Length: 111
Length: 115
Image 1 (tube, one colour):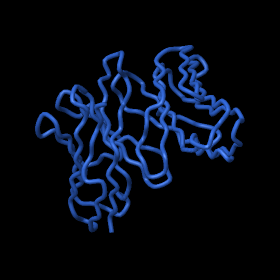
Image 2: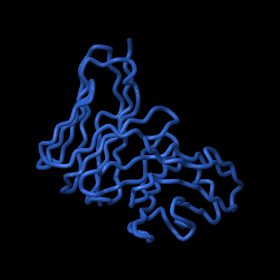
Image 3: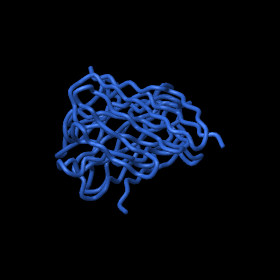
Image 4: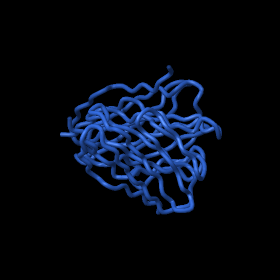
């Protein structure tokens, strides 16, 4: 059974600081997804990483994938309050297959 | 920008009643999914649908659940006899999954409350 673990589960940080969220998974896969969810809302796709060593950046967020270590990271640079949300990583075993989600990291950025 | 739509946004029902949740996936997508999220918990996969049949289902997706694509645009999830523990947010998603466009796009969700 595929397991996806995120840490930390809760993260409170100050504006302007940097931090990294980690996502470990238990199977060989080169398909890793990051989503953002605001309270009561749907899931917004942030990144899709499809190969070992893939790195993608959008604004203050950067995601990377190491398939050998079965690890993805979501790095936050110079956090701002608008980044406060829950961030989920998810893994798919093949193209088109189900996503298995991690528990989510609830990020709060304090002024 | 194309998006996945879902109706209704909220549904309140009595235990034992049937509910149908509706979704319109993105028009050129071929893979369709239902997920659910119990309040405060992670997102759980229910079922995926491709080429007019179920391609995967989870252990949550038992005989009380069914999916249909009744026409070329709608994708429905039916729960035959709802239980209290079916209360959750239900998300529909769709994907092209063509090796290039692999994102699963999620709809806004239907919040189901079973009383």
